[in-house]
Length: 129
Image (tube, rainbow, N blue to C red):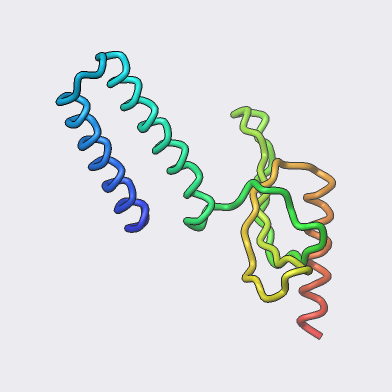
């Protein structure tokens, strides 16, 4: 876990504790007090999950319309364990060449796997010549 996420989480916990102490000292009903705490807690969980897109984890967003595939790591489905396959692509958006490459996580598709291997092999040939 990165230091930034740890710091944000600690800050959220402190705010939550402060909110809980404040709700103990007000005249609101107990139901409203606990509801406020649970809503804030839910918000923190959603925000934490949203921050994962910025901490280096592969994105599950849609791929850019046009891109250059830089690297690929494919985990094929495993019939014995029942694990679904997954493909990790590192690519550069052709429309935004100034942007750094980004990692994407895609569900395993045999056709896309085959095509990505072909593209990587073609790129190796071009680089070696």
